[in-house]
Amino acid sequence: MLFFCLYAALLIALGLLEARRARDASSFFVNGRRSGPWHTGFSLIGAAVGGSATVGVAGLAWQVGTPAFWWMGSLALGFACMALLLARSVNESGAWTMPELIEAWLGRPARTLAACIIVPGWVLILAAQFIALGKLAAMLTGLSPQAALAAASSVLVFYSALGGQASVIRSDLPQGLILLGGLLMGIFCLFLRDPAPLLALDLSLVNESFGSERVFSFLLVMGGSCLAGPTMYSVLLSARDAPSARRGAWLAALALVLASLLVAGFGVLCRGLVPASTLPDDVLPSAIALMPDWAGMAMLAALFSAMLSSADSCLVTASAVLCNDLLRRRSAALCRSSALVLGLLAWMFAAQGFGILGLMLAACNACMCGLLGPVLASRLLSVLNLPPASRSPRLCAAAVASGGMLGLSTSLLASSAALALSFSLTFAAGVMMRKD
Image 1 (cartoon, rainbow, N blue to C red):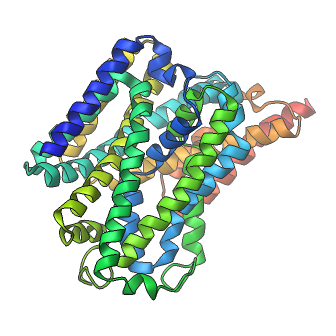
Image 2: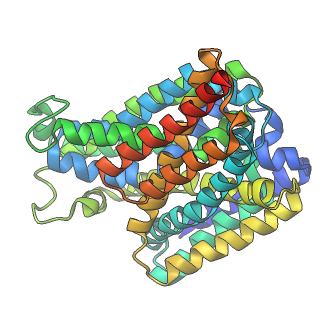
Image 3: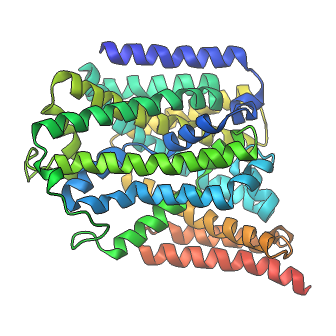
């Protein structure tokens, strides 16, 4: 309970400080465009690493071994591609949100469609993160599940609404360091207890339990979510210049390779300690229960930090897109109110115990399929010196809509078809203008 209270007080104090220091809309939406490479990199990491990348990867490594690397390894490759292909053009656009940038590349109708995909989808993702946060808060505080959910959600919504992107980016760096420290302590503790699973490990990127098809699926979905994630774009738009954006993306790529190795190693070390009947998502919590109190608290702090840094980025992105791209108002006060409303809505979903995981995955996939193909096609048109796709806004809107609709199905075939269709339609928009 003491740790939770101190952590909550620190975050709220940070939000109050940012609210007093920077009251203009630019600070709330894009941190006044003053993020250096370190803050940019750790904010990208914070946006990418949540409960799935910690609890999920540990359970997967416990099952399949080192191929679990591909979960965050795919994110790392996505950030590397972002550094090479998109970071400069995104940062230099001067936009405040991803949909605003999409208007410049694809036209006004595509901006509205993108915003309509992002806002409800990110509310569902936030609700899922609230559920995970509530479970961890219950372990940290001893409160009932519902009370812990309300407490953790309230803290996150309050400090995010106070400071916006500025407070989120300020908090991501210490939260990332807490995550790294907690993982190292947990691995050290498990290794001292029984190093045999790690020493006898078969190092491989694919095996019988994790084939090449799953690798391709991870590369497509996880890597694609980096290149088409509105939260990632918000971080790049907050960087002070293009070199800071690129260096931050490279930092995130390298750090995620390290994080993937650490979490996968933790999962492997759980073999022999955690009963074979344990569900994959319960592997990491079960291992924490076997640790000394100091190591268990360090791991809980690491997980709590990871989930907070992912959830606050999600909330600020959703509220910024709602205000900037649907309501078309750049107001810090309105964005704070929107964050409170969206946070309340996400908490209501989470508190009712809805089975939102499938909806969350569908929303994330729809965003990736509806936006990644058009974004990559528009950048290819620019490289080839062809007319911009924005000259055919209706065709670009059709590309976003068709990709998003097909992406609601999370099957690999549907996702691949959605990406191919949205990319082809957008590229055709530029080629047709050349012929005209």
